[in-house]
Structures are given as C-alpha cells and as structure tokens.
Length: 180
Image (cartoon, rainbow, N blue to C red; front, side, top):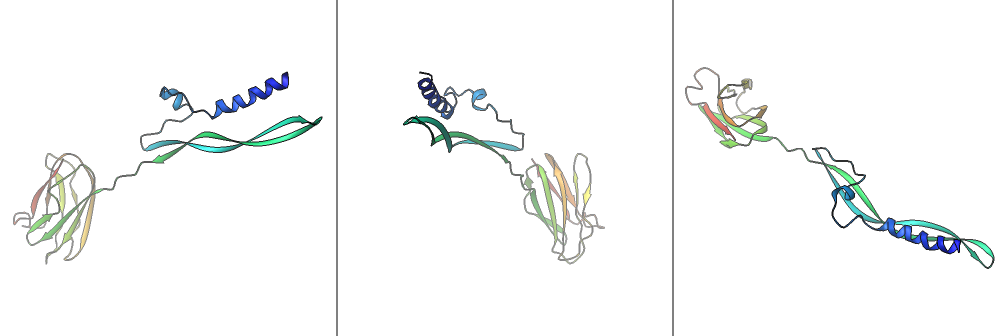
C-alpha cells in the first residue's frame, strides 16, 4: 500500500511543478523570485519547455529495477535587457561671410552636439550662451573648410549663437536657437 501511495503522489508533484502560476494575474505571484529592474534596464520573462530526468525504482519479477523516464516541464526564464542610450541631438551650423545657416531652428532639450562648418574665406568661431544667462561655450577660431564641435546639455529656452571675431556679429553672424 505504501508503494502504491508513493507512486500516485510522485507524478502529482511533477504535474504541479509544471503548471504555470495563478491565472488571476497577481503581480506578486507572477513576479515571485524576479528582482525588480532598475530604471535603465528591462526584464523580459518567457516560458520554455525543458526535459527533466525522472528515476524510479520498481519491482519486476522479484528484482528491484531502475526505470529512467524523461518528462517535459515548463520553466520560466527571465533575462535583463539594458535600455539603449539615446544618441545626442546634432545641430549643424554653416558659417560664411557674414552669416550662419542652422540645420534646424528648434531642437529638443538634452545632450547636444553643435558642429561648426566654416564654408567662408575667413576664420570664424562659434559662441553659444543661453539668453537668460548661463555658461558661455565657444569653439576656437576655425579656418576655412574646417570643422569644430561643441558638446553641451541643453535645457528648454532660447540660446544665442554668434561669432566673436571683430565686427562679425554686427555684420550678421548672430542668430538664435530655440530649445524646447
């Protein structure tokens, strides 16, 4: 009788282990054992079928015999995927005698690269400052046909872009950029 009870209980345990969690959608039961992801990662879980080796000993013809069977079991597999880092916003500024041409007059706030492309015959530079006050950033004097970059973190507002060489700003190398 003990052997019969053990034979009936053992398959029931494996069946319970193979069943998915509660169908009610309780987040505690579904996410049990899964560490919460940080703000820069995403956790993705899925169910997979695995083979499980089950060994039983049975009596056959008066001898104890080893029986090996394989059962399919559903296993929950979770992995953490890092969120992609957004690329910086790029703004192209073409300088010529005596003016600037911007690739966009309005950009989104965030990590920004401003690239000065001197298409003129004289040296030019580029100064960037938020209109209501802030840090002034500048490129060095850039020769004809050369490129230079400024990398900054922009916040919503209006920024002034100008060339600081003598009389260049007064002659038209002064413009505004809206971040917003």
